[in-house]
Length: 150
Image 1 (cartoon, rainbow, N blue to C red):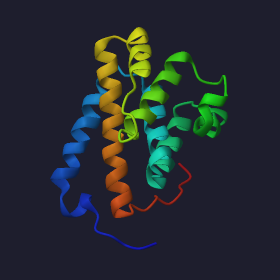
Image 2 (image 1 turned 120 degrees about the horizontal axis):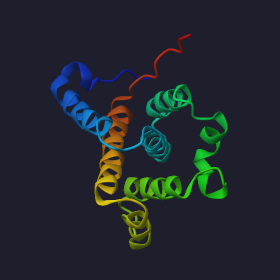
Image 3 (image 1 turned 30 degrees about the vertical axis):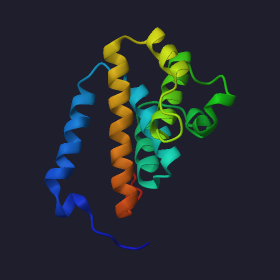
Image 4 (image 1 turned 180 degrees about the vertical axis):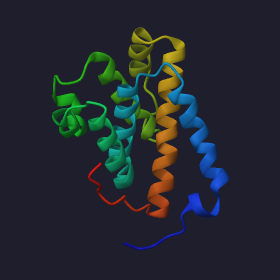
């Protein structure tokens, strides 16, 4: 694969700023499994191999099933995901593809019927953050880490 400039090496403060958002989200009330679904689904939509690889492995280590990971790309055709997860996945797709229709009124209304304002805000921030990471990784062709036995 082509070698490109890695922002983490040439502009580490910019990278650390994104980690600031990660730190905020990790200390929020956003459930870790919801955050992993957001990260994986946005990365699938964006085609970010680095992030799909990383976050799928992390989700499985956290106890997520292989079945759900395999079905995530077609979540709307299964009964595998809860109503809350389905809304989060729909939000993830709509916000990731903001140029199409944005977050639709229907999805927004469904989300606020299930989540309070703070949780909704955390979902939006999580979607926004993974989209930043995806754009950095795709633009710089961040290499996928070598598989380890850990």
